[in-house]
Image (tube, rainbow, N blue to C red; front, side, top):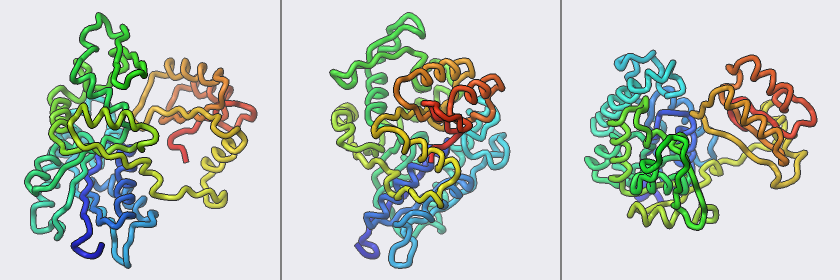
Length: 359
């Protein structure tokens, strides 16, 4: 594929968290590795993260020219009452600022549309637009450009299938309390029972995001032309087929997008955290380690974290446990982690704690 015959994808990552920016950037690198031209458009803070990953990707250049371009459009944080540079939800000072973030994100979408439709717009019309979740304004832009719009949520097909089931059948509305369990038979014969407390914000009566914004996200999902999922058929073939049937959309498995880059296994090029993790994993039996992570946006009260920790250290299998914000935990929780896990190199523990991102 040469010149104008190459597919041209424009990607708009959800700016809310790094955990959405990174996999969508990797998706762009994956598309470029198959010969496509890719444009990633995001905020300045997130553009720096995306560019650093693009620069390390083998497919970032084609015949001496950039196969992937990263463009930063200013994010109007201050206009929405947020600190300058507050371009992700993990940078917010409190949950009270979440509605302001969504106001700023809508204004950001208007600025992006002006860029894409104005004189500074990329010379090539896109073949397809892929939008991160919550970037609801992308659909209008895609319709104006006359190109298909696919949505990328970042998580797997089973989770999306369960969300679809909850929207259509609403079993959570038939229980008497937030703790009562109800069935979510989205993937028979797999049995899944949840309580209302375990549901994502989409199904909460009151959330910091706001009901109008959540309804807009749902409307966007329904109207999008297809779904791109960070999974693969061998892992979730049943969920993929049922998700396509439930939504009536084309569902494309592209995962794992992180495989667009080869991990560095050279001890000399690793960080100290990476070397510690690899040494710990190398000492374990193959396929024996349980990986525990609640994502970059996951937060739990210290008491709940302690209860989880007690269960994990008593687990018969070795556990690799990622904790975001571990350095800001209360001293008693830090002391417990230090005494019971490999958080600080304690030898012999079956539970290794990583503060932040796993290498």
